[in-house]
Length: 202
Ligand SMILES: C[S@@+](CC[C@H](N)C(=O)[O-])C[C@H]1O[C@@H](n2cnc3c(N)ncnc32)[C@H](O)[C@@H]1O
Image 1: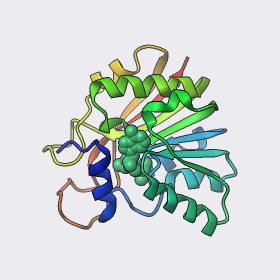
Image 2: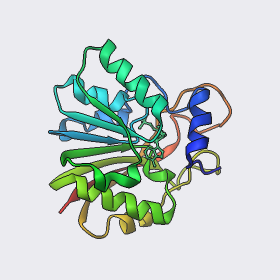
Image 3: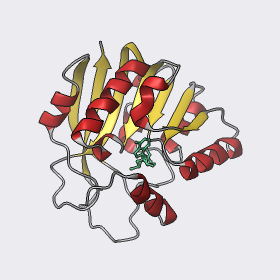
Image 4: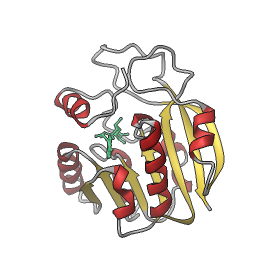
């Protein structure tokens, strides 16, 4: 079932979302040294990825369209004595953000959008990334069998989405770390298959 509207995410947060692993995604950690300068985390959830970069002293802004995960992200920042900005904001309105960033991360947001919203989202990302800035994106891949969870994304769809105004530096098979419980969805061993994309804004 493709999950992409606000109420679906609200009900997922009322339970135990599969992506809430309590630590940054390994795919992001693996390239952390390349995620430099100020960082935008689009669809940050409760902020584990964003807070990792805050802990390295980077200027970080996390946005999510739901108030609840943003409240939790702010609490985590306070508990860990970290400085980060977390805001309730629709990622489809990124053009309204009065700030530009050196890097952006997206762990689990891109695959949520319809074709039209995807276009708008990528345009927004381009408007908030400095020229030469990089986007690091982890999304569900069409290599993941079945249709439970988010929609699958093909390599061609990624090429199309970043065809104008971007250079795709790499698209590599990866995996999304998820909680082992509850067992409502059976993903393969090691988590759902994903693409890890590095795209540079020209
Ligand atoms: C799969 S979760 C991933 C959360 C986090 N990035 C992580 O890796 O743990 C996707 C997140 O995107 C948020 N989201 C979905 N649509 C959004 C939109 N249009 N604007 C901002 N956030 C959105 C959801 O509320 C959810 O927190």
